[in-house]
Length: 426
Image 1: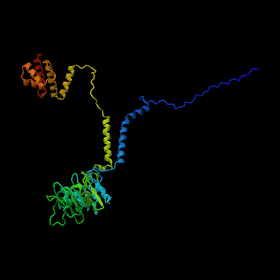
Image 2 (image 1 turned 180 degrees about the vertical axis):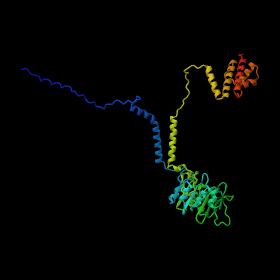
Image 3 (image 1 turned 90 degrees about the vertical axis):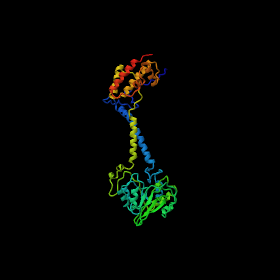
Image 4 (image 1 turned 180 degrees about the horizontal axis):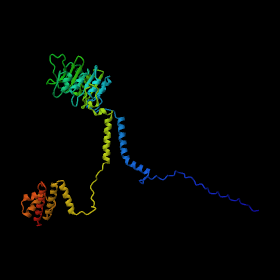
């Protein structure tokens, strides 16, 4: 009995459906009319714009960092928010801790609007000067005035001609020698004197003067009028950060500025022309920043700096000169005539004469066997020996002054040619 093997399975017919691709199929790029695709044009634009965008991004991050991290302060001298040695932030912070409300202003109009009865108006030194109508406006506020280092007009205006000012001697530590409470609290200080008593016997208000020098000038004066007080200090060192801790300056500053709960701190803008009579316009104030939002000045400065850096980056820079063969052969005569035309167009007779003289001197020196390092005297002596010409005549020809006009230049050329013809090799 024969075993019968099972038949092999029938082969599976191949599928007529192709297998789907496993990954995405890239579509052919869309070609634009200039033989570029959208992707290539975008990449090209990005390559051109990435450096300017990077610079602008860095600048923006820098500005944002300054805005977030840096405490807003001022750089104006005697400003209550200036921490530098010439500022007055130390006194202002102590006054705030004592409950004094400080209003920082930079124009007369703002000072007049903020100051009034039962307030103190501090007037710091003006880089320029106050006009008479501005002084009158400050006087009309009715506030107690404290004036630091005033000029003649300010002293006469705030004191109603009861004080005068001039230059005093070099200051040294001096006792106040007066009964004023603020001066007594300060004690011996070093302040520059310069104030004088200009009142007469008939005046009802007499100034209290403190810290005199040997000439009778005083550093401090106080006048108590019926409606207000006026304090004048000839030396602003009493409020500066760099000197407020010296001797009794801090005590004097706190006494003067802390007599009322409201303190208007005027740091004059040199361009301010306002008086406070009406609501000032930006044109009346004379300030460009009055038209700008707060904080725009540093932002504008950073933008200008970024523009300058961008200009330096994009400017066409010329590298060193590269020596290369001319594409065509230029004859020496043509090059000489071209340079001569340039000299003539520029009226550079001195340069032309110097070139002609140098060439003649070089040829003559070579003909006479002189070294290239020979000085002018050696060349002149050798030419004199070869031509028997006067020494001064040879020196004028080879090393004389430049010709005055074209005729003199042509005459110089003729004389140099004659001189060369007379020189023979020894």
